[in-house]
Image: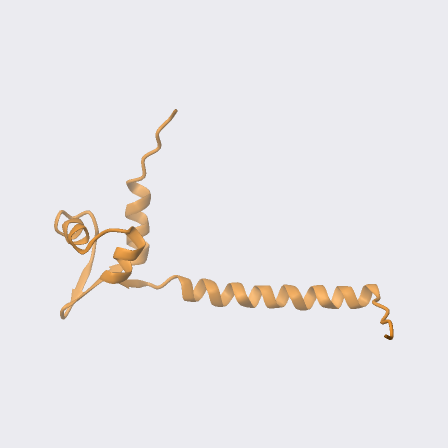
Length: 92
């Protein structure tokens, strides 16, 4: 079995290629991971609530939403803002 000699230039080139691949993965993951608007099913999954609880949160004004036709959309940025505003920090 022949041996290959790896030089520091080879390692540097490998590092650059690896970093470029990681950057590309992060770009695709971050753009696919956050959508601007979420539908009700996605909201129930995100908040881990039932359809009835989600409806209650809409009715009492806790969650802002937009209804177009028969479809309800939630602005992801607004939902995260509501979550942050309502966070509770207990001191123990």
